[in-house]
Image (cartoon, each protein chain N blue to C red):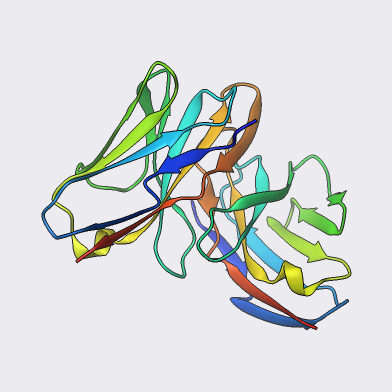
Length: 111
Length: 113
């Protein structure tokens, strides 16, 4: 019940395309769902986060869609750029407690 | 405003040795969490410290221990190192009761030979 399942494992998109990364969770006690971006050799950097009382949140080119009944959430990157090439992790937590991470998606944006 | 800092950046140890990793939280943060990230995997929660006490613990053996100091900085200690302990160790800081956001440091890359 503590798992967060993320897909796909890897994704290749042309510049300007809209990569979509999906996550599913089981624990209905989770109430905080962040997305992190990680470059090789660096720590994860927070991109955007959402709570289950809203269905969508947009910050710049990044959008989270949240489906509470399906226990799923996804990240969309608009107008993707080669600089967006990184590994993306979804996560979930109950309040400020431990983050449970997905397995990660390695995203490549081709020029 | 300095973010989360960790030291050292890299560390090489041999099996059976002990290691101490250090973390300074983001200014204004009082909670420190430690995560282990194996190559190609998502971070796994080790434990969280608040008010100098361990508040939560993940599925890690007692060889992993920690400490939080009055200035909110923290240490992670690993005893009797195993080859499988080779990983990137990440520290994240947050503020209890104010925000659920955890900000990560750059990590310490530990290699056990």
